[in-house]
Length: 263
Image (cartoon, rainbow, N blue to C red; front, side):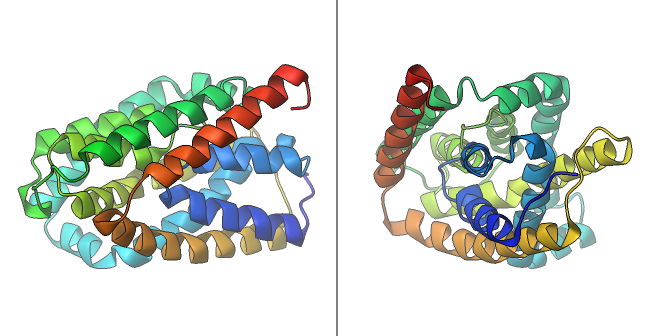
């Protein structure tokens, strides 16, 4: 059993909740957080438990849309969700072992933060060109965004940053881009939690104290909910360049730390 105290669970839960929906890569930040606390052995299981909290957060935000999909699974929203999820699932299942190995070693994490910054900077330059609202998004748009979401399984590539960038490139309105990006995250996060749950039951994942896991999940859910609401409003009238500068600085620090042997 991997021991994780309440303070570590509290901090990691907040990190996950904020960074899942801010375009700065939750997995990359969790890797750094786990390393800081000496919880490297917890690995992807802890990450997935924390993702369960953000899944609860996004379910709380989108329960009306999900109810609409449940009533009309092949309506407009249902088709978009299906078409966007298919490429994500194909990429995730095909390269699952490869992504897990990269996540475990963290050898490319600094470069991935730099790449995320470049994506955000580019996205900010095109965020005022989109016009499509939710009811104007086409299945092909969803496929493209879902493909970008699959590529974001790399540890420090921001899922929200990459999917928002893809949505903007498809001419989707900036506020709608964030809204749809988070909506499309629901099956992706749920699928990751399901796969890791199978690993746990088959003895391929670490176990941790239940009380710490519950606290981490609660913090992740609370701060994830706040981050979703704030990020949608921010993209409607704000800039992504501040996030780009932040992840560039973080990526530079990681690369220097790896080069000098500190990290």
